[in-house]
Image (cartoon, rainbow, N blue to C red; front, side, top):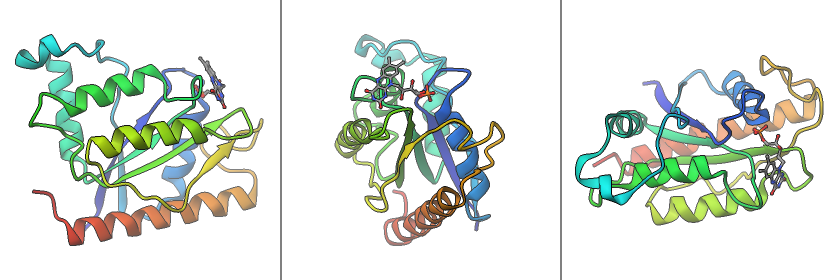
Amino acid sequence: PPYTVGYFIGSLSAHSINRTLSKALIRLAPADLQFTEIVIKDLPLYNRDLDADYPPVAREFKAQINAADALLFVTPEYNRSVPGALKNALDWASRPWGSNALTGKPSGVIGASSGAIGTALAQQSLRGTLSFSNAPQMTAPEAYIHMTPGLIADDGRVTNEGTEEFLRAYMAEFHQYILRVLTVLPPR
Ligand code: FNR
């Protein structure tokens, strides 16, 4: 059957290079994967005082995570970590205690940066949060995308053949990873 992938864009920018990267990934992914964005921009700041009465926007957000077979995080690096908006979203996803939506969700982590290390430290930080939240993660291949002008067109077309093949292979591996996790460990 097709698998549904809920994807997160860590950037709120209308000109996000990570949103552009996500378009390329969706284009290059195996047809067996179907993608839906899980939007983080409408979530208020997480406050544990709201755990007892989760706001509707956060309930809907968690329902989208629950509905997805797998999660893909496409995020920039802000000051050597993930943007606060994405961390905030993960905090909402993880609560209230006992109903963590991230548990058991096969996850992929990727990001693009204008800098040379291509979000390596943000990804490391994100992996720590996902690990604590019990989300199994594809650990290899890693993908640190150094975005240069024109590398990926606005519609997600990759202009460099080597980069295109790398991203295609990344998504093929992610597909295999999802299959393995969900075959061995079906959701509880
Ligand atoms: C950055 N940028 C950045 N780049 C990086 O490689 N490491 C970093 O720690 C940071 N820190 C950082 C902080 C803040 C607040 C901003 C706005 C930017 C640069 C970043 O890679 C670049 O702005 C990307 O375009 C951000 O991705 P989106 O928003 O275009 O997807």
